Amino acid sequence: MSQDGFHVGVVGATGAVGREMVKTLEERDFPIASLRLLASPRSAGEEMTFRGESITVEVAQPDSFEGMQIALFSAGGGTSKELAPEAWARGCLVIDNSSAWRMDPDCPLVVPEVNPDALEMYERKGIIGNPNCSTIQMVVPLRPLHDRFGINRIVVSTYQAASGAGQKAMTELSEQTVSTLNMEPVEPKNFPHQLAFNLLPHIDVFMEDGYTKEEHKMINETRKILDLPDLEVFPTCVRVPIFSCHAESVMIETDEPITVEEVRALLTDFPGVEVQDDPASALYPMPLNASDTDPVFVGRIRQLPGDTHRVSMWIVADNLRKGAALNAVQIAELMIAEYL
Ligand code: A2P
Image (cartoon, rainbow, N blue to C red; front, side):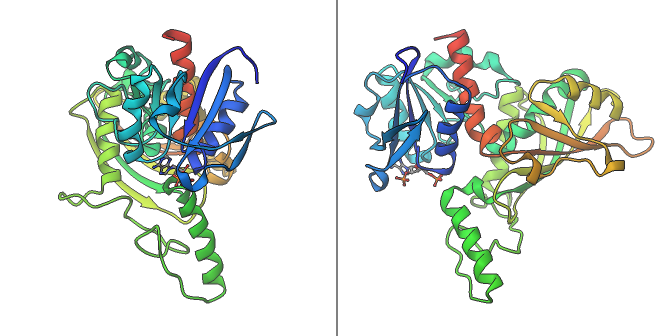
């Protein structure tokens, strides 16, 4: 490994997002002097490959962060609560994919194309929140639309892949699919019901108001990232039986008059967005095409005749990449360019 660059760690390196983080660091030629891969005692000793070299997975513990400069966490909220402050106490910046620190007023919650300036306060706790996957892909295209037209209401339904619930959930979806096709009984483990050949309008736990915690994340995180504490957000989050990519049907209401042509032009020029919108030739974003790619794809941009303040669209992105690993690595790149 090169001696130039930073001492980096990935916590939760054996998980669905952690593996994607390692892959993304490699693909983007991230400046790395050393890389430590950390997980639970269950996978200590496992070998993973980075830039052609084998790295042994170690147990994540406070001492792991000695000499480390940047740690990407994706090992669940409990691990982040416990170990992220330990990392910063040793001078290691944390970019955390769990929800543990996202709403902490002293922690920036950042999508680089949307609110890079929020990173300025990173030294307050040394922990930067990587937002929820469904939130990230929604706020990227909404940023230029809000800047131009002022968004006052969002109504969104999500179609979220099993990979958003981790590696075990993906394995369970394949097993359930095989069992069902073989007419064998299915015993749900990571989901509240069978997911194969089904739809679950239930992601994370239900809250007192009837919305789920996942839906609360979309409301609260969108408000924090766009710095719009009173923005009206009405989400319905649904788990669907696919492995990769989240899709979203989004309708926005705006303060200023808005047209489909203006939306298309603004989104075409915005970094991180790719417009795929030619219904006549059946061109629109789909998970099968978006999988393993970086952009947030937007299509089906439309408006009812005579409606001047509402636009609907269909947004698809790879939830493990832009929705998680890629966004975290982009934050790290921005930190290096601007602050470290
Ligand atoms: P392990 O593979 O050893 O269980 P996913 O979201 O795909 O389920 O992945 C979760 C990741 O978080 C895995 O890498 C998992 O490691 C890791 N993890 C879970 N609990 C801990 C813990 N207490 N300390 C460190 N890593 C953990």
